[in-house]
Image 1 (cartoon, rainbow, N blue to C red):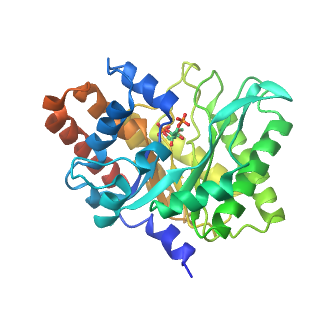
Image 2: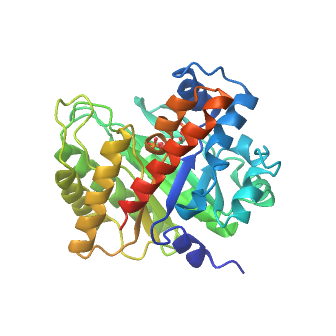
Length: 330
Ligand code: 5MM
């Protein structure tokens, strides 16, 4: 039988973290378009290969979250991406949610789709080499109105049902209730919402008897909203994020991974370093790591621009960012 706890813990190997290379077609199209790269299955394959084909990534990456299309594509080494990653000791993972849509009971909020055919899809993903999975919920802050309890509860129920299903299928679940950076809210408000989201989530996880030790939490940092006019110091971010998580995430979870959420690469790296330092100094109980998408990939994407001659420079920028983010874990 698969040792899910050991597998989940292995994603927190010293100095290593998780690359979120799981942008859906919609998101990948938007990211590529920002740099003048036309969208097609082949350009998305080349985009994935830019990162997954870079020599030496195994020094910094314990896992990569893939999008379903990427599971079946081959890299420059002519190997299927999951096989190529596994051969280098990097666990291939898979995004299993099917994205968000407006929540009928509160249409300004989002609810995540994808539970209906999940058991069948998990079997297929396993066959193609997936070892862990991820489900994202998006939580919006807007004044005192959002998030509503009903949306928090429904997103938590779906995250918990997903986790239960994934553990029964013999895979590790990453639960990502992202509290969005977009908005005018204060850092204190972001901290309070992160805490509330986690409390709600763990109460539903307990109702469904989901095993805590083999699950991973992927979370936002507590930040003043991007339109608040305030830029937090790394120490402020670290203190409020760790306080919110200590108050709401049980010590038994396999670990906590941070998303970058639209912060720039330097900002996300500095905040991660302060967070890890603060967690150590205050004796926080869980292993920590990164699970960034934009903060790891954006610099390389800006250099690549879809042109094969730019691949060496773009990969060098990606490896330099990976090294900096890995150093932030020390
Ligand atoms: C929040 O997005 C996740 C982390 O990425 P950042 O570090 O850039 O914030 C990311 O894993 C996200 O869930 C995937 O890119 C999939 O996003 P979409 O919007 O395509 O479902």
